[in-house]
Image (cartoon, one colour):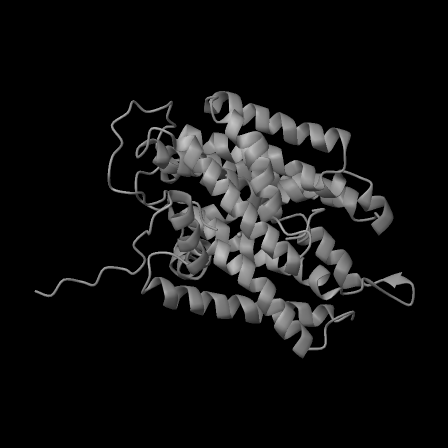
Length: 356
């Protein structure tokens, strides 16, 4: 993801030896050891959108022809650009909150483990920057160190409004972009602290209300963004505000669909992508570079091929993720991240069914 605006953060397996010292302040557990399928599906949705956002800057697609902006990039700005990174950023904050809750049940120094987790993520991000300048992992790690670690001593009812206030201030005083990330991370962290994701099945009316409000707000900001040229849009917070409300609408819309029979189709597609979000986020860059070159997309205006390339990469990653997770507990990069976080070898393969 390129700002102006990858990884799943479910509770992490830890060493089995319990540390006898008195624990530090703990977050409320959100889901025990159970993965939350809706969160994985949301990560999968965010990955699909972020792939679309990342392809143009990686392949340097041009937005104009004969000194006029092409129609596809304009539609892209209205419905894709800045519409998915808020989901990804919020979910990173959620993941760190869930991780710290789990770590607090396993060690007396959970924030030291979180610090190590963030430093490893920074290393991943620094390497990924070599392939994709402007990627998201390094900023997430930096803002996690600067914002989430110190704010983790506060309860959810402080962190959630502070995160919302940070987001509002950035939109009111600036043009959004990367500076939205600290507030989004903190808001997600506060939501995880509150335990709200353990009760998603009981919150249908609240999700529907959020969908309705965010859809209406999206329509207002889209109407404001529609006539803007590229230069005006860069200097305005309107595209970021539209993106934020559309991100909420996309997310809550998916959560509502997951409460219908459509779940039988959506979950097997999106959840494997989300469970291997870190692996899929990084490998999508490699696949974009390789196949974009084969398709002759570098420095071109082939916006139609963008969707073909994105669909092909997504299909490969869905099939790959389902195959991999049928055999292993974690994606490759997720496993390395866990091992480095806990400084121990975490079991990798899924246990074989016992013969009877």
